[in-house]
Image 1 (cartoon, rainbow, N blue to C red):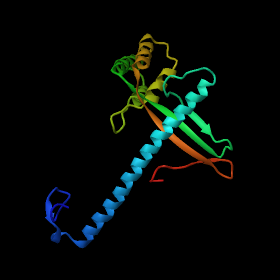
Image 2: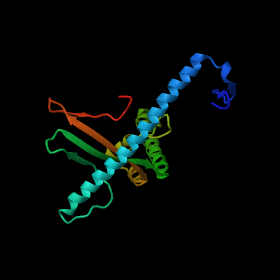
Image 3: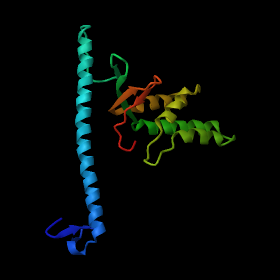
Amino acid sequence: MLDGHMRDAQGRLVPLEMVKEIDLQRDQVVKEIIQGALEVTDMIAVFKFKAFNDIQAFVELSAERFDKSLGGTKGNVTLCSYDGKYKVVRAIDEYQTFDERLQVAKQLIDKCIHRWSEGSNANIQVLVQDAFQVDKKGQVNIKRILSLRRLEIQDEEWQKAMTAISESLQVAGTKEYLRIYEKEPTGEYKQISLDVAR
């Protein structure tokens, strides 16, 4: 609120006396929930930071007992409580992407298909073109493209295309995940959710 006014969704200042009571109450409820959510988000961020640091410190301590040092935080780690009731998992996923050489591979594959399908059924084109389709974000499906490398096709141009695909694959970054589990009476581990939506 600014000097007896409230800003509406269009950015206009509306005098308080012109705002309906139900709109004032809704605004208050939403802002209280948001404030609580921001506080919880900060707490979770602090918790995750400490948990990742604690896991890494323990991994390094464990390695020291064997006179080994570990470089970086790469790799998944699972730690269990002594009684097996609790389990903490640090998972690290790599994001992969293709560079410009994928376009070279696509052109080589297109040449192969054109050469192979001369005078034959065009369905072969559809099968390989499917691997290069993009999703709503304009991204190609890495698994579909890499699956082409499993095809044992003895053709020089095809082999060049497969080399271009392999060389174009790049690690774009990594993301760490923290998963916490509690063992149920059935003996199965159930994840302790830190996700409000769940």
